[in-house]
Length: 133
Image (cartoon, rainbow, N blue to C red; front, side, top):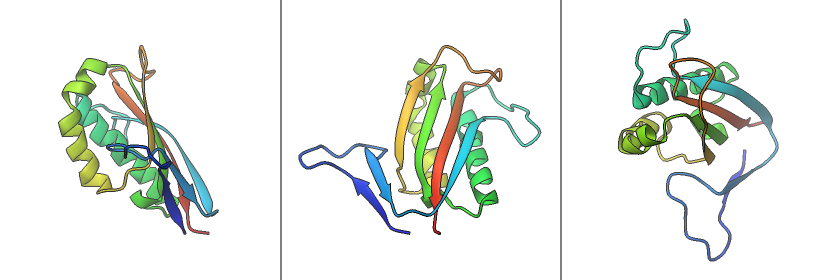
């Protein structure tokens, strides 16, 4: 699978994400929004960083079920209903990211919303991955 990070000429490199990724066609995996609960749908923390850790773990578990690995993720969209909490936890969230994803930074969007369906969820991650054909 060939992957190319897209950075238009003259643009400053983004920090912690890619503006775009071009991928040679393969098998596409769409991962529904995952919140910070465990396999039995139980939350173990109301804090945003542990929820982010669990949500990313869940994304990677679904991806692994399709035969994928973290480096196959091309896009992640995050929905968060606690902007101050997210901003305060950015350093911890960055460490969690590196623990699971290493230096792989796909195209990402962070969207702040008023609430999530699953209480006491504070963050939800959805992803798109491309696996080799």
